[in-house]
Length: 165
Image (cartoon, rainbow, N blue to C red; front, side, top):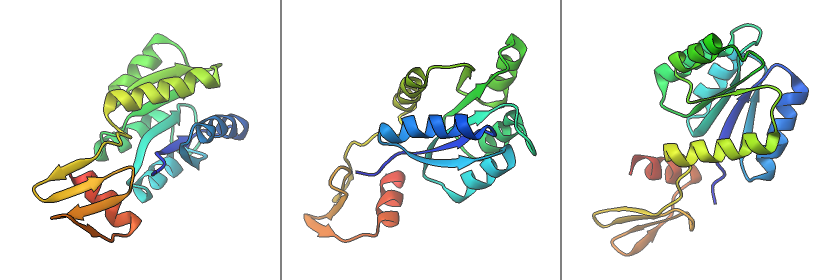
């Protein structure tokens, strides 16, 4: 089974590692970034990211700007994780394209639950089989069948075909 990939951008190493450990424990694959610029770059390098988690107050490029740039390229769910809990900050996050806004301090268990709910609502990470004409993509088996014959694909080819269908 393909692991869903989540990008976490948080400048505080301990918080980033804590969140990553909880997500990995739940079967997610995590990519880490230390600032907003690095987050935008890592997102560009990993087109199979299913969710982006951004801290607002980061060096180089803040989470709002990173959110805006990522949103211009993709509809991937974006979760803002921040100590800034004023109403205008939350509104700004949603205006930049965020789908969820969570204030620090937070419960890692609640955060993981919100991530799962956001993925479920967005349809990201859906692992159902798909078919079109004589083509079947059996997601859990990671198998492609064309007119009843199994076709060998690389992992990247499989993921791309699944995404396109």
